[in-house]
Length: 226
Ligand SMILES: [Zn+2]
Image (cartoon, rainbow, N blue to C red; front, side):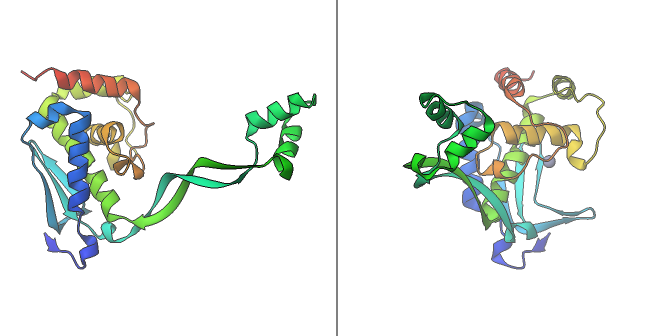
């Protein structure tokens, strides 16, 4: 353990607490577990390098990290009011109303014409840079709780079954995130984590999990491990 050099490197206690409440609201069974998620205000150094979090059966830890002091790109939805060109469907409607051919060029021509623009409020996705700490803290919390959930609810054979479901049995490992335990923790974060936690990209080299994996995990968690 090493002291953080600046307070910017500290994990966000608020973001971790929010993440825990979020996960409990999505998976109420977690409320019955006495699993602490500890925020450690020191950096954790291993021979392999600095780590931002770790988990053991029954507990998760989020550490300070140099990365927390950096910035990352955050994609958010917001309302934007202004003059908007018609979208493809609207442009096609205009063309049909005028009895004109609908093709990519005519659609583009309609979209470029000023008189078809409308003053509207639309939902847009916008990227901005943000201080990394709240996002990385949420990410690490959700990922580490994923490990604790795996230790608490799933046997080794369950994990093998999960990899089979993912179509990843015997798959080549291209990074340390392709380890079965890491895939499960990342999948858990991706499927159940908050929007904030999921501003960090999915890290294994396989495709992201989806509804099938979500349902499988929820079903398994319902049945207590004997
Ligand atoms: Zn991990």
